[in-house]
Length: 346
Image (tube, rainbow, N blue to C red):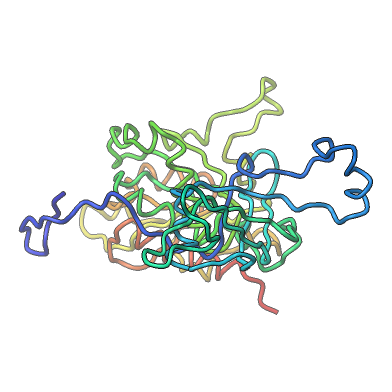
């Protein structure tokens, strides 16, 4: 692939077909976990199994799974070593985590020793992980800070989105809304990430592994920004817009980010009636301090149409200053400031 240098020259760069992941927590989908079932125990062993402690859930990974390779080549784990692990949240329930999962190597083929191969460090076979002492994510006050912040993001370029998704889940958010905007080409929604939704999830899970979290952002996709005006419910008196459904005004501070710029001459009509704020000046509706943050494309939201639309929906205008930032730089900076603003300081 090619890129442009600082003076417009074209620079050729290698294409990476795989990425080496650093896992601060081994994460698994609910479908990968095997749970102990008493019905599978032989009758002769039933009385003994009732007296013994219940068996923990287990996960068995193939030798070529990236988590197995990481355990062998990067961490050099041996039988009974402990790792941090977790089950990612899903429609079946909130996530669970443990800091005392134990590993067990299951040699395959000609390999006899249950340990990484001496010369290459490769896995000897299957990797079984015993998820000891699992707890619900809500039981650990330090496990997740994602419920305070949500993000409405104008869809960036596909390659940039691929890099940005792990960053977003690392920072921790509750809802992620990927939407179109006036400056977002429609063909961005035709990228491989949207043709294979599992890849979107995989990129978000990658970020959770780095952060050690198990709470997956709830993902919403729309090709039009104004999808949030869509009404739900047949009775008009009871119908609520999706914006109010996801981010009610009595719970969330609604914030839209846009570069600060000067106005002159004919542009004076575009000057916002209310000066933009810094993130630490945002006003919250209550003490729970929750934010939904809207970040536009690299050229910013359309002025005045899209900015006026946000203002009509009670969004507060915040800015990082006059510089026009790339989406990844803007998103990470704004999410960090939003989390800081949501912290309760005694």
